Image 1 (cartoon, rainbow, N blue to C red):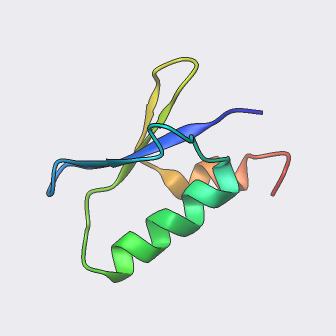
Image 2 (cartoon, one colour):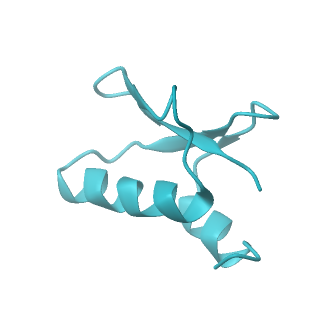
Image 3 (cartoon, rainbow, N blue to C red):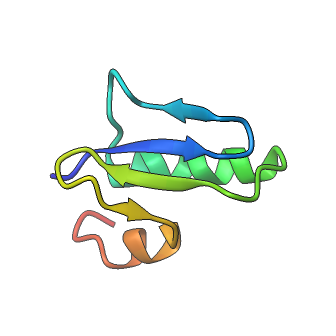
Length: 65
């Protein structure tokens, strides 16, 4: 199962660096950050380095969702 870190460019903040999150965990954290007013939030797959901006599609396409 893929694991992700969360990146918020507006604050130069990254989450999950020591404990990467599952897709579902990352999705809920992104929702929480957006509710706090952060508009630009992305995920990074820790195995491939791929950056994901369309978080909703990650959950929609996830076999665990």
